[in-house]
Length: 265
Ligand code: ARG
Image (cartoon, rainbow, N blue to C red):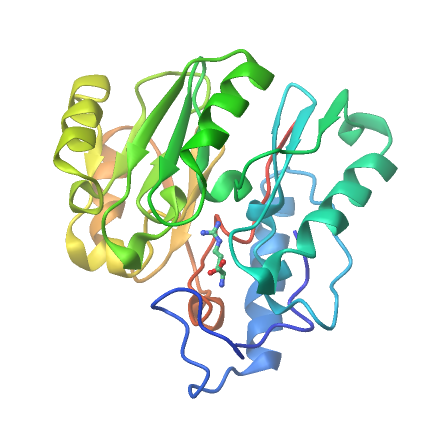
């Protein structure tokens, strides 16, 4: 995670961002710290990436890389405003030791925005395309991780990254996800229905609260508290929803998942 000390909205690269809308920075910091402390209270280790004064979106740490079994695929950002973030993530990985030390780091050839568009299940990599990550990055990821990649077409600009429209609930399984069908093309919707017949399907209001921008450890699901419609279906399937307040970070177009890069080392 990267602290939001320099978070602000000065450019707009997704429909959520409005530079005219003020951000309450102290509140953003408090909300972010509460998320970090919640992870720690649940027994997870949280490492921090140093914030950078010129890179307000660095707080969305999920976009900087994808890590599976210590193999790190670096990011290459679609928009010039975010491009320099990739090198900071790379340096962080290459400096890491202990459990977070990378086995292998790959500098990507094609545009991919990390876990913004890559979601990991037990055996597959689900991969979004349409707004940010290049379809060519899907083949690159399949070759690098040696896992089948399932490409999914995003069609609604409000759900510009896969992680705004779909969340893997248990990465030890291949069938546990929640998603918002309308964010996907008709063909991709059918693919999702085939692969995930028991998925939690989100209603528009919960998707618009970025309720799918959630992080699950296989039991606890941390998600924006405004996405209350998802709590019941999650409980029915045995998960424990943990509501989180991240309203200031929503102004940049992100919530829980965007703020969290997962190190599957
Ligand atoms: N303002 C950032 C952007 O548009 C938000 C990124 C959100 N991150 C995510 N994983 N969806 O790039």
